[in-house]
Length: 200
Image (cartoon, rainbow, N blue to C red; front, side):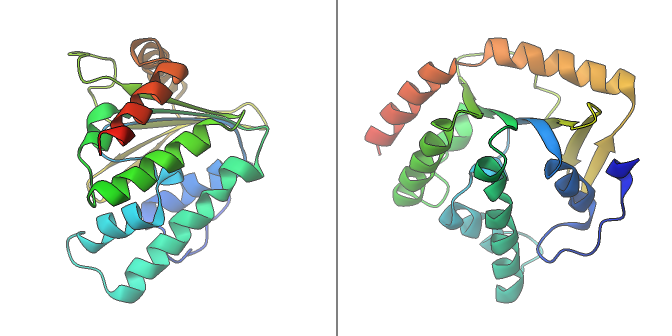
Protein backbone atom coordinates (compact mmCIF):
# COMPACT_ATOMS: atom_id res chain seq x y z
CA UNK A 1 0.00 0.00 0.00
CA UNK A 2 1.06 3.59 -0.56
CA UNK A 3 1.31 4.15 3.14
CA UNK A 4 4.23 1.77 3.39
CA UNK A 5 6.45 3.53 0.85
CA UNK A 6 10.09 3.57 1.87
CA UNK A 7 10.96 6.65 3.83
CA UNK A 8 14.41 8.00 3.16
CA UNK A 9 16.71 9.52 5.72
CA UNK A 10 15.33 12.92 6.57
CA UNK A 11 17.68 15.14 8.51
CA UNK A 12 16.29 16.20 11.86
CA UNK A 13 13.61 13.51 12.16
CA UNK A 14 14.01 10.52 14.47
CA UNK A 15 14.29 7.30 12.48
CA UNK A 16 11.19 5.77 14.08
CA UNK A 17 9.15 8.88 13.30
CA UNK A 18 9.88 9.14 9.57
CA UNK A 19 7.16 6.76 8.39
CA UNK A 20 4.56 8.60 10.45
CA UNK A 21 5.81 11.97 9.14
CA UNK A 22 5.25 10.76 5.59
CA UNK A 23 1.73 9.59 6.47
CA UNK A 24 1.02 13.02 7.97
CA UNK A 25 1.61 14.58 4.57
CA UNK A 26 -1.17 12.41 3.08
CA UNK A 27 -3.64 12.72 5.95
CA UNK A 28 -7.15 14.07 5.60
CA UNK A 29 -7.66 13.85 9.39
CA UNK A 30 -5.01 14.02 12.10
CA UNK A 31 -5.80 13.64 15.80
CA UNK A 32 -3.21 14.21 18.53
CA UNK A 33 -3.41 13.76 22.31
CA UNK A 34 -0.30 14.83 24.18
CA UNK A 35 0.42 14.66 27.90
CA UNK A 36 4.17 15.41 27.93
CA UNK A 37 4.84 18.48 25.78
CA UNK A 38 3.17 20.73 23.24
CA UNK A 39 2.75 18.82 19.94
CA UNK A 40 5.46 19.59 17.39
CA UNK A 41 2.97 21.08 14.93
CA UNK A 42 2.09 23.77 17.52
CA UNK A 43 5.55 24.53 18.89
CA UNK A 44 7.50 27.76 18.46
CA UNK A 45 11.18 27.83 17.55
CA UNK A 46 12.11 29.04 21.05
CA UNK A 47 10.10 26.28 22.74
CA UNK A 48 11.59 23.60 20.47
CA UNK A 49 15.09 24.99 21.02
CA UNK A 50 14.67 24.76 24.79
CA UNK A 51 13.52 21.14 24.52
CA UNK A 52 16.33 20.09 22.16
CA UNK A 53 19.04 21.94 24.13
CA UNK A 54 18.21 19.88 27.24
CA UNK A 55 17.88 16.50 25.48
CA UNK A 56 20.06 13.66 26.76
CA UNK A 57 22.44 12.50 25.48
CA UNK A 58 23.42 16.04 24.53
CA UNK A 59 23.04 17.10 20.90
CA UNK A 60 25.53 19.11 18.86
CA UNK A 61 24.57 22.60 17.72
CA UNK A 62 24.18 21.35 14.14
CA UNK A 63 21.91 18.51 15.29
CA UNK A 64 19.76 20.97 17.26
CA UNK A 65 19.47 23.27 14.23
CA UNK A 66 18.54 20.35 11.95
CA UNK A 67 15.84 19.17 14.36
CA UNK A 68 14.39 22.66 14.78
CA UNK A 69 14.34 23.16 11.00
CA UNK A 70 12.58 19.82 10.47
CA UNK A 71 10.02 20.62 13.16
CA UNK A 72 9.21 24.06 11.78
CA UNK A 73 8.96 22.73 8.23
CA UNK A 74 6.40 20.15 9.32
CA UNK A 75 4.22 22.97 10.65
CA UNK A 76 3.40 24.01 7.09
CA UNK A 77 0.94 21.10 7.15
CA UNK A 78 -1.53 23.23 9.14
CA UNK A 79 -1.79 25.91 6.47
CA UNK A 80 -0.67 23.89 3.47
CA UNK A 81 -3.43 21.30 3.88
CA UNK A 82 -6.52 23.46 4.60
CA UNK A 83 -8.90 20.54 3.92
CA UNK A 84 -7.17 18.31 6.47
CA UNK A 85 -8.93 18.29 9.85
CA UNK A 86 -6.48 18.69 12.74
CA UNK A 87 -7.53 17.99 16.31
CA UNK A 88 -5.18 18.57 19.26
CA UNK A 89 -5.92 17.70 22.87
CA UNK A 90 -3.18 18.87 25.24
CA UNK A 91 -2.87 18.56 29.00
CA UNK A 92 -3.21 21.97 30.69
CA UNK A 93 -0.17 21.32 32.90
CA UNK A 94 2.09 21.28 29.81
CA UNK A 95 1.48 24.99 29.23
CA UNK A 96 1.58 25.77 32.96
CA UNK A 97 5.09 24.30 33.17
CA UNK A 98 6.35 27.47 31.43
CA UNK A 99 9.11 25.65 29.56
CA UNK A 100 11.71 28.24 28.62
CA UNK A 101 10.29 30.89 30.93
CA UNK A 102 7.46 33.46 30.69
CA UNK A 103 8.50 35.01 27.36
CA UNK A 104 8.78 31.65 25.60
CA UNK A 105 5.47 30.55 27.11
CA UNK A 106 3.74 33.78 26.07
CA UNK A 107 4.93 33.30 22.48
CA UNK A 108 3.89 29.63 22.63
CA UNK A 109 0.37 30.51 23.78
CA UNK A 110 0.11 33.10 21.00
CA UNK A 111 1.16 30.43 18.49
CA UNK A 112 -1.46 27.98 19.78
CA UNK A 113 -4.15 30.66 19.71
CA UNK A 114 -3.27 31.61 16.12
CA UNK A 115 -3.37 27.97 15.05
CA UNK A 116 -6.75 27.51 16.70
CA UNK A 117 -8.17 30.32 14.54
CA UNK A 118 -7.65 28.22 11.40
CA UNK A 119 -10.90 26.62 10.23
CA UNK A 120 -9.28 23.19 9.97
CA UNK A 121 -7.63 23.24 13.41
CA UNK A 122 -9.28 22.44 16.73
CA UNK A 123 -7.37 22.77 20.01
CA UNK A 124 -8.66 21.55 23.37
CA UNK A 125 -6.99 21.61 26.77
CA UNK A 126 -7.50 18.78 29.23
CA UNK A 127 -8.10 20.66 32.49
CA UNK A 128 -6.07 19.93 35.60
CA UNK A 129 -9.23 19.41 37.62
CA UNK A 130 -10.16 16.38 35.48
CA UNK A 131 -8.77 13.79 37.90
CA UNK A 132 -9.20 10.83 35.53
CA UNK A 133 -9.53 10.76 31.75
CA UNK A 134 -9.27 8.38 28.80
CA UNK A 135 -5.69 9.34 27.95
CA UNK A 136 -3.90 8.12 31.04
CA UNK A 137 -2.24 5.31 29.06
CA UNK A 138 -0.18 7.97 27.31
CA UNK A 139 0.02 10.14 24.19
CA UNK A 140 -1.58 8.92 20.98
CA UNK A 141 -2.00 10.05 17.40
CA UNK A 142 -4.48 8.89 14.79
CA UNK A 143 -4.72 9.78 11.13
CA UNK A 144 -6.87 8.98 8.12
CA UNK A 145 -5.41 8.84 4.61
CA UNK A 146 -7.11 9.92 1.40
CA UNK A 147 -7.91 6.23 0.85
CA UNK A 148 -9.81 6.29 4.18
CA UNK A 149 -7.30 4.05 5.89
CA UNK A 150 -6.64 4.75 9.56
CA UNK A 151 -3.25 4.53 11.28
CA UNK A 152 -2.16 5.16 14.84
CA UNK A 153 1.13 6.19 16.36
CA UNK A 154 2.34 5.83 19.94
CA UNK A 155 5.70 7.23 20.98
CA UNK A 156 7.80 6.34 23.99
CA UNK A 157 11.37 6.72 25.15
CA UNK A 158 13.59 6.39 22.07
CA UNK A 159 10.94 4.50 20.15
CA UNK A 160 7.73 4.89 18.20
CA UNK A 161 5.12 2.35 17.18
CA UNK A 162 3.06 2.61 14.01
CA UNK A 163 -0.31 1.01 14.72
CA UNK A 164 -2.10 -0.72 11.84
CA UNK A 165 -4.20 -3.39 13.59
CA UNK A 166 -7.89 -2.47 13.10
CA UNK A 167 -8.85 -3.67 16.59
CA UNK A 168 -6.19 -1.50 18.20
CA UNK A 169 -7.17 1.45 16.01
CA UNK A 170 -10.76 0.98 17.19
CA UNK A 171 -9.64 1.14 20.84
CA UNK A 172 -7.62 4.28 20.18
CA UNK A 173 -10.62 5.87 18.43
CA UNK A 174 -12.82 5.05 21.42
CA UNK A 175 -10.33 6.68 23.78
CA UNK A 176 -9.86 9.75 21.60
CA UNK A 177 -13.62 10.27 21.29
CA UNK A 178 -13.88 10.14 25.07
CA UNK A 179 -10.96 12.56 25.45
CA UNK A 180 -12.74 15.06 23.22
CA UNK A 181 -15.78 14.96 25.47
CA UNK A 182 -13.68 15.24 28.65
CA UNK A 183 -11.51 18.15 27.50
CA UNK A 184 -12.52 21.81 27.51
CA UNK A 185 -14.41 22.97 24.42
CA UNK A 186 -12.34 24.88 21.84
CA UNK A 187 -13.92 28.18 22.97
CA UNK A 188 -13.29 27.47 26.65
CA UNK A 189 -9.75 26.42 25.75
CA UNK A 190 -9.12 29.77 24.05
CA UNK A 191 -10.46 31.60 27.10
CA UNK A 192 -8.23 29.62 29.45
CA UNK A 193 -5.15 30.16 27.25
CA UNK A 194 -5.85 33.89 27.17
CA UNK A 195 -6.13 33.96 30.97
CA UNK A 196 -2.91 31.98 31.31
CA UNK A 197 -1.17 34.38 28.97
CA UNK A 198 -2.40 37.36 30.98
CA UNK A 199 -1.04 35.82 34.18
CA UNK A 200 2.51 35.55 32.82
